[in-house]
Length: 491
Image (cartoon, rainbow, N blue to C red; front, side):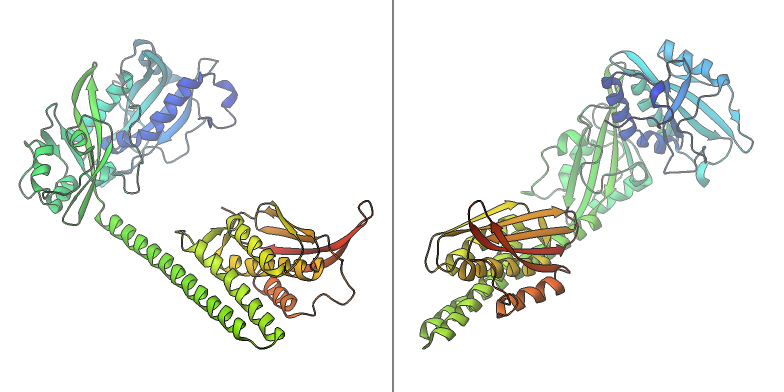
């Protein structure tokens, strides 16, 4: 778990892991308080020397901040520590009697003890500009009251709420998107202008204040429309969770934060956001992904058809040279089709090349070995490879394995080992056989090796080298083809 504090103050803090976890949950969800009250929130932790040091800071997204400067890592001024200690020892929210004048504005300070399992573990100061319109707008009192309710929950150990949904999906609502307050029975007692607009677009044209929100929304959902199973408990404010409502192509994301006071339910805060445009864009992307997969599927099918035509033509060939040339062309087309088959299963334009090459290796060795027993083995891992590089890499390795079987082993029993070593964007591959070895001037003379060299230098931005292998212990010879390629960094 990352430490809350900067490196310079880390050694001065000694809190149990459970307390640190609670504080991390708190700062993951305290933005809603800062936005509701247009206040800066600063988390203070007491050090081993008895001083308070700032561990986290949240600025409001709905108005101007009090602290333009960085405060994390600073010690609390001695003049303020008396109220912080009072809040910590009394386990009560303490409000400074007089605003603090900063030279440009007056700041009201509120000290909120952070409680976990009935024990105070830290202090939050809520610092609010007073005497001016904050952020150029008037702060609504109902939203201030909601912020007060959440601060009270912090002081009573009821906030953060365990298991609450803070960022379940893209489009999670925030205070600026829309605020609704419910009473204990799920009746709407306050609706912000943005929330009112959201529900109006959904189809609730009448005033929703005074209505049971769950009932009002249920009435406008068409029959037989699938709904989220959490819809009712969220709209009633009974569960700290996130749900989504869809009516006529309009999507509302609704987050519920149940309120508690002195251990009893005290209504709920709902955050509402119109996510129709977000969901529309997501659907466009899904359709695009499906189209791309379908294209790869059709390309794969077309390549398999071409492969079958080449095979048929090869059977009708009248001489061995033509038959062999068509068989090689068929194998190369089949290799490319294998990559497209893998791409047709993915959303991204990438493939797990280890799975692709396992199929390519088996096919290349089986086609090339007319006689003799050939064993193939893959060592290491290629990782995820982008589509363009995967096409070239598969073709290159299929050619090298085929060449090793046909020319290296020459219809004798033997082994072809492919080793892969991936270091971010650098890939090194060895294709090693234990055959007759490399003959001087033999490499780079055939069509296959020319294809391989072109793809390695052009598509893979790499190098290729043929090396003789000699094993005096086993009295064996062979060839080691080394391919170095530059790929996109692995995810």
